[in-house]
Image (cartoon, rainbow, N blue to C red; front, side, top):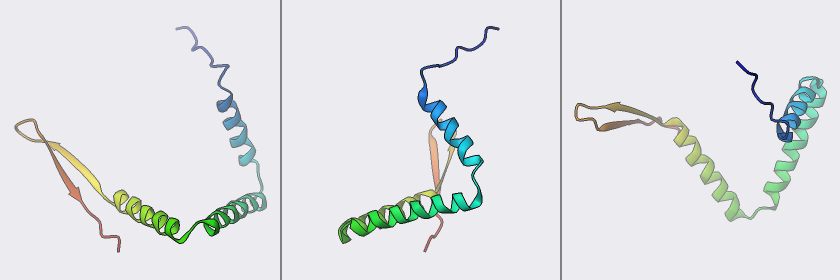
Length: 92
């Protein structure tokens, strides 16, 4: 079989690979520093949002969390229709 053609124009893949290698060789202190900087940046962004935006973001997080707790189990019935059973987990 011939070799697969290399996608030489895909710079994002090379960049992502370079970042992964760089992160793999970081020390624990560097990782903590990067995480702390990210938390500070996130907190600053949240501090600048209005109360309405904050409530909306929190509501979206709640909805996303509840949706993740649901599992949709689909089975095929005798007539060929799909029967969906939703199992809800209480996340209160």
